Amino acid sequence: MSAPTILFAAKPDRWPTYEPHLRRALAAAGISDANLTTQADPSDVDYIVYAPNSEVQDFTPYTKLKAVLNLWAGVENVTGNATLTAPLARMVDTGLTDGMVEWCVGHTLRHHLGMDTHIHGQDGIWRNGSVPPLARNRPVTVLGLGALGEAVAQALHGLGFPVSGWSRSPKSIANVTTHHGEEGLQAALSRAEIVILLLPDTPATENILNAKTLAALPEGAVLINPGRGPLIDDDALLAALDSGQIGHATLDVFRQEPLPEAHPFWAHPKITVTPHIASETRPETASETVAENIRRGEAGEPFLHLVDRNLGY
Image (cartoon, rainbow, N blue to C red; front, side, top):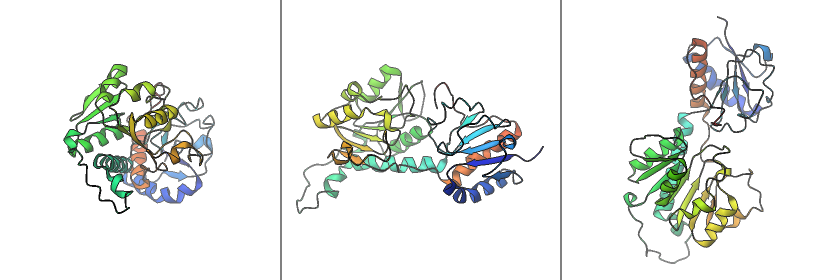
């Protein structure tokens, strides 16, 4: 069997960062003879290590293509590409997962403990009039129970929070009260004092938090969104914040990025904007995921983390 040709298709500045890690991971997977390159005749390419913002948008010339291995956890920018008929694998990266857990736990604790009051209140006033509940008395709901959502839910359970989770289809996860479907969404939100959104961006999840679902939350609930911007109806969120139905929203993702300077989120006193930094694919660990799927492809084994085109993730 000839050595596979692997095309790295991402922004050029990513190649020097990824190349040594990919070569190391491929060697560890027993594929050290692979032709790893940024330039290749499309008809020779077996695998594409892919970022959706790369120049490769037409997959038709890649007639030997065995799989496209996405470098991003999100695949909404490629699932609708009609020219891509080869298997598409999303990125499930232990480094990305750990980073997301740390970011979500950090902001959950920030809101749970009321840290903003003291961080921003350095004005000589001794604010010791409120004591937060213990974690065991602060219900948290995670919307989206994929690899990221489950990991975040388990970490919060480990800190003592009672954790509920919601997914489109039924799931059973230790330590998490799981819900699914439309009725399940209302149940998942009804007691949630903190909600974390880790759903994919699909037609079925767009505006999943809207005027109706925001009203289902306990008054003063906090939203944390490191998932996708379109999961929240922006106008409904602003109205809920202004009415006091939502106490605060920490948002890392937006419908338009970078968030325009004039967007009302920037100036709203109950919104924290972070610039899409919740977690990042780590080249070292992501390369291991890519190499394992290439090893599987060459061995005739099933690929990991394949995208269901009908569901969009």
